[in-house]
Image (cartoon, rainbow, N blue to C red; front, side, top):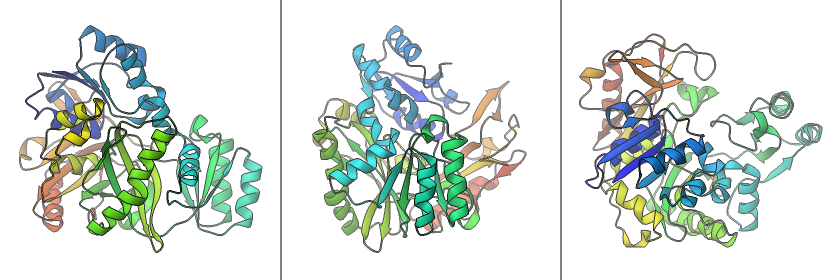
Length: 416
């Protein structure tokens, strides 16, 4: 088989690393890929959102399966475009990817089908939104409606922060068109857990649980990022909780999407919060999470390509999915200043002496045989061990071997 993976971050590197283990695969292409991915796949210089160029490449190379990994091309309809040309593609069609592309859609879906989530209101006018928060209680959660690279959610601790957030999103257009509407939600409390699930539109197969650390600094301080590290399994997500989520959240969501004529096929990410009133949905993503993928896929014992084909063919119920009884921890090495201003182009040293670890490249490029930093999140150092404490210790051993100018990482990943 020839497989094309769309995207070029740490998530895509992990997916390609796992795909490469399948005996079914002869050749992997990545578009656009990155420095680390170039060791496993042939990188093609096509932007992840360039649907016509991606379809043309897949046709020319007679690709057997296209794996669309990032949110933008999914929401823009890349899977639809591939299917129209007779190319098999893994991921939801645009009418299902809207579950991530529009927070208003996902909140309304949950309300309609009684899937537990935070109470909310939607606003198209900034003055109305400001008037609403002035009458409300704090903290409160303010979300740009559309995609915002995981940064479009602001937890306002007081009226001033709430007003500033609304103005930034709706008037200053900090997240572009994603801020045309805002969702203002009640603030829920409790630990968060991420559960990704394979689904073919009918059957749901949850993966092992994970928890990620979004804030830039230790002890969950600093700005929200795309994720500074993650671990699997969650220490808090019990078998009983999994059964509760299957009954109240996972299956109802898949059935709701089918009922709406938007059958969801691919990976659906459930961002969950364990509140005093039961587990509630914080958000949905229409794809593998980043950096959750970097700890979930290393624990998968089954052939990922077989699972992906079963999803595409709507026969997921026929496939057995096996997970290892172990733990994984990923520490993200970022550029100093991330998620705001940062410099790139620095040489990364120490990658030759990390054989016991999985190093997933997020923002790197390869130049003259050397790896250079090329993004905010640079590398994910993943360690797998028999339990979480051992995996944490091992991951930080890996981190200590790698250096580049202005390296920044959290020292408390896995300790939640």
